[in-house]
Image (cartoon, rainbow, N blue to C red; front, top):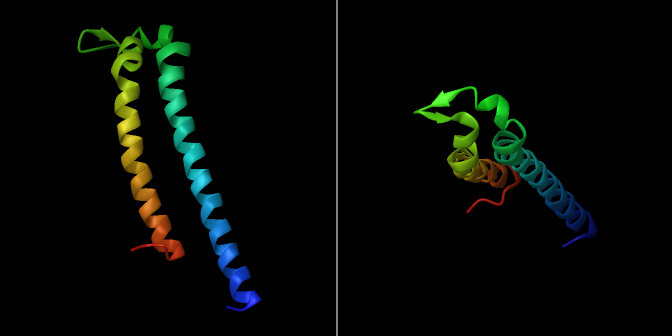
Length: 91
């Protein structure tokens, strides 16, 4: 393997990880905003809305953040599958 091929492979791997970290940061920020923001910071404003007889702030604190986390896992899997194909790391 020549030096140019190694450099190209390294640049490809670096670009892959930069994009991966970007996805992680965005998804974890969404999770933080939903779990901490909606469940704690914006609780009083959200408690003005009721869902199924429960205040929305309470719902987010108890269950909403868990549902969002599960959805974010599936979003991450989909994004990573697309990223793997983009950079040639697919199966």
